Amino acid sequence: MAHTEIVVLGLGYVGCVTAACFARLGYSVTGVDRDELKVNAVLAARAPFFEPGLEELIQKGVAAGRLKASVDAAAALAQADFAFICVGTPSQANGSQSLEQLERICQQLRPVLSKRGKPLVVVVRSTVFPGTAEEVVMPALGAAPGQAAVVSNPEFLREGSAVKDFLEPSLVVVGGADAGAVARTSALYGPLGVPVCQVSLRAAEMIKYACNAFHAVKIAFANEVGALSTRFDVDPQEVMATLCRDEKLNISPAYLKPGFAFGGSCLPKDLRALNFRASRLDLELPLLRSALSSNQAHLDRAIHAILALPAQKLGVVGLAFKENTDDVRESPVVALLESLIGKGRQVRVHDPHIRMDSIYGANRNFVESSIPHIGKLLDSSLEGLLGWADHLVIAQKQGPEAMRKIGESRLPVTDLVNRVTG
Ligand SMILES: NC(=O)c1ccc[n+]([C@@H]2O[C@H](COP(=O)([O-])OP(=O)(O)OC[C@H]3O[C@@H](n4cnc5c(N)ncnc54)[C@H](O)[C@@H]3O)[C@@H](O)[C@H]2O)c1
Image (cartoon, rainbow, N blue to C red; front, side, top):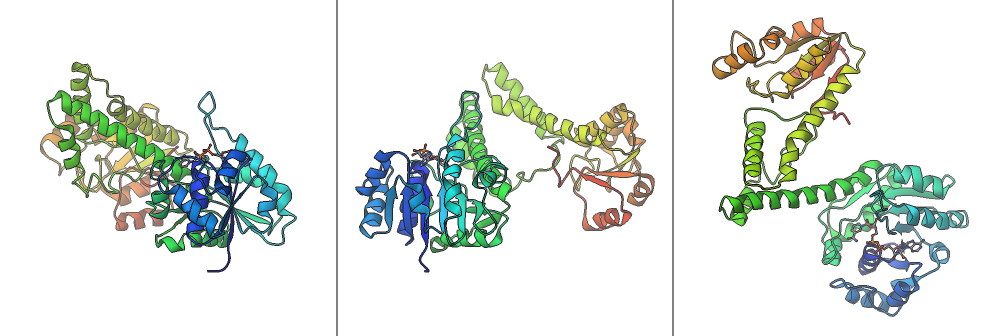
């Protein structure tokens, strides 16, 4: 391995573990902190805080001469190839994120860049919002071309198992616009033998928040289902362990692709029943209660986006609550169409599985009794819809043949399935 010098800025939980683990991987590492106590601890081969396995790594790194520490960022950065920014981004009183430490460390980096003879890869490891690297870090560094490239490499470690999490990571993400800097940062993780997800700069920043939000939602979900199970005299562990056995729909990428609102004859009905029963049991389940209102808010965003279009004739593709079914009960498309009609838009709709002369039973009854006005808007052929509309709204996943025809029509498209309105 070519000699690689890494400077880690901030020796808190993230920075200290990052520094010790990169030294363990064979790189030459200097940890920098403004807190002399942390620097002195590392220089004395001690961990500045308790974290299983950390002190041992620090001892080995220091003894091998691969791990140093300093309060002098400028001196440490003189020969560095990488600067990992690991400073804190704590909450402010109103819940917003403080970037004070990040801005200050960038100001310290700025004068150093022009004095160095080689480019520096500045890696933002602190948790920051999408756009921070571009809008805060890059302007604060003020680097001339070739002096520095900024990448994002969020940290996913958990306190208590941080060293293990670094050396056996669940996910390594590197984002940036400079392909060379992204490749060099990714290569640092080569000895771990894990794939590195290379994404855009903003996506890397966002993924960290998405992961933490997902973990919080998972815990809250398990605890709400657990509480409800207990009230029903059911073993919560048995329920959740069995739920996790389903690796097709439950513990899988299923239902995790942003798209259009959910609907149909099961999810809304069962969530309503669950929430009704919970309230009867005097049980507060805010997460489960919010799922339907979250879905409604998502639908409302789509409606507002479509109402803002300069279109006269809206052709909606898909009417059932999802593809490959003719079930229109509680389809979010029905609510979408009703809003558009209510606001005076001209609308027609095509669904490959729904023609009034070919749907039967409960489904036909529902269309005739509950949404007869929508039945009248149906276009039995996609071609008919394409010929009539001046704007298309894709409300349901379509097959390749339909997508080809839609593409060839050259009509402007609002794709609710693949593009999420924010
Ligand atoms: N702690 C975690 O479990 C964890 C996990 C993943 C991501 N993160 C994120 O990583 C970042 C760091 O978290 P942490 O828990 O390590 O924070 P921390 O507060 O423990 O450590 C930050 C360190 O940066 C130092 N520092 C600040 N400004 C400095 C400067 N100008 N020069 C030198 N040193 C400076 C501080 O003295 C402190 O030691 C945060 O954005 C956090 O959200 C934390």
